[in-house]
Image (cartoon, rainbow, N blue to C red):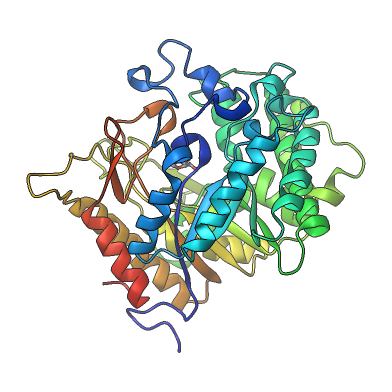
Length: 452
Ligand code: PNW
């Protein structure tokens, strides 16, 4: 059955997403090592309200309840991440069996509730001990990541078939080590050359993650990267603006998506880097360009592009009155779900794409007197974005699934706990969960495989 105006293709994967450091809490429990986010939370002024990663949603203890709630809502696919410092507290060095045991119990509980795991190996929580030895600027980071990936894939090959190597390379490179005052951990600016080196080490780590799945994943295992590509959309859907958006998408993503799919850096990219180009070791690109099974895209907002007067692509920046969520970077830009998958498929050759995150951050109200959170804004956001996703699929974009960010309110990094992305409200004092109106809305979409 083709996608009609309302329905999605058969077997379309509907899911929800979250990440270990944002929900688990238990930051020092059962031998877990310190992560760069645990450390950053101790720096005065780094996190809104002085919030820390404790207790977050206390998912470490409440996971059975959380999976039961997912089941009630009809959720059958859950994207989660594993905390590297729970498993290798020092990054490399001794293995902490208790960390592996925790995730084994977690996967067992998911199985009991009929939920398929989609596992991100790394969602920003680098072990602090590795940061102390240079972090992502040093080659040690991808090398240690490779050993960690081998361990988790061989341990869980029976329970996990869908692997995602890294989440959003830009957020632990550019936004953590870039110029100015980077907000993401470890929040340590480095030189332009070292910044380019962090990108290179990240895509190398991705390659090592792919190799781990090919060697240890077992039958039916699949792997891909989750990227937050710069999604370039045409201001007008005219041939000239579409061509400008396409050219700009290629350029803005060529150090990550382009380098991976082309098996090397483009001449144009290296020219722009000049003397600050990354050091590449022989054989790196054999790993980096290992074929993957899918691409994950986290899509919230993007860049408006038109053909400028000189015929070159021109970016248009939204002004202060442009509609946005409470997260100031989150401009409403539903067309990103149309153009993102389409351009990544066209330019980088991806044949299967999953939207591994999409959602919106608001300072939502607590449950009202009737116990409801009537987040019509999140219903509207989701509906508008899904309609563009559906239009893209109808026009041939190879999108196979969509994961809403997030299953529940959680630790929103430097914005702390006040900024809420959840379909489910979390009261952090009582750890009570209340599905919002948007959770029931999304539940109905999953149930009927169409926009309602
Ligand atoms: C993603 N931006 O981060 C992350 O993968 C999640 O962990 C996070 O909670 C979620 O989106 C909501 O923020 C992003 O500045 C952080 O454009 C920043 C941006 C985009 C995504």
